[in-house]
Length: 207
Length: 148
Image (cartoon, rainbow over all chains, first blue to last red; front, side, top):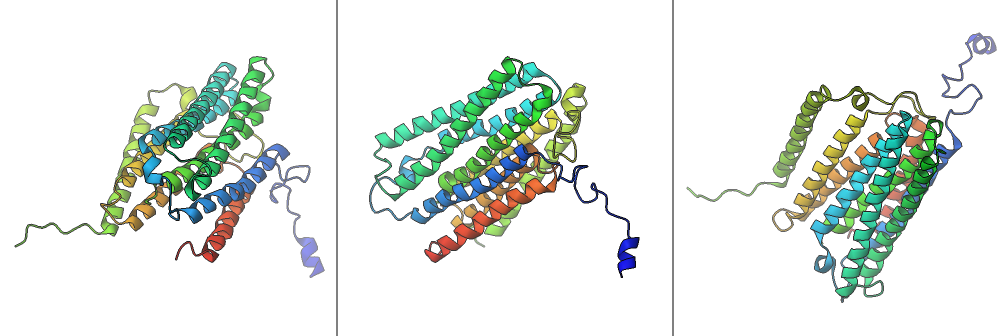
């Protein structure tokens, strides 16, 4: 038996999915971002569950059908979806060394994100005018906390994108640092996929 | 003989919607090949080199745009289906909306987050988080009788 094992050729690092140094061939930055995103699934899951739990249990105050403006929210959702496109185009541009286009696409992504946040602020203001506030009823509490936390994530993403844009403007974002754009992109796309779930479960589902 | 038209069953509407989605996808693929022939090389070829953790090159910018077009079409279908409330069974609306949200989620995660071209370790971590969240909160909602 021992002879059989000894006779087998040793698996190469590549065959084991490892690099030449015995690592798994991925950077800490990217792996760390994916771990963060994985944990963020549980974070948003908690607030989405709370929304579903409290859905339809209110005795007083405005209901979702009284305040939601589906065409308006569809338009802002479309803008956020398009920001994911401009984000991957920024990554494609930096990989090609086209730094002018990197700045254009990063700025476009940040502007799309800011437009989405502007739409959310407008929506919150309208809801407040119609009598729906954080402490009005269960719907108000769960809705504002869930969408507000998502908005906070988008805002953090905008700051990140503008920082990268500023670095690129100063010539501090060379092609070798394309991973910085990729990791920011992972965060941005995650914010987008979370909105895909929120838009469907919160806005479009029958009440 | 009655002139009344028998109401369409939920499954036949679902089949029609799925058929429409497949038809649109087929048309988009054909249009994609046609447009690709007239685009500059930089728009249809993947970026050179691999980033850390990548197994295959990223898609071309043109492919990214095509994915965005599919996302917009599916979003438009989603919003249209939500307006069918009262016309078709709520259960069918829920089913269609969930399927379309999963399609959109999958497209963004696999093409824009590059899970289809990156090492499987990233996908495994992400799927772990999603599955853990679904199981955990499903059990919580079940114990609180949300589905009863």
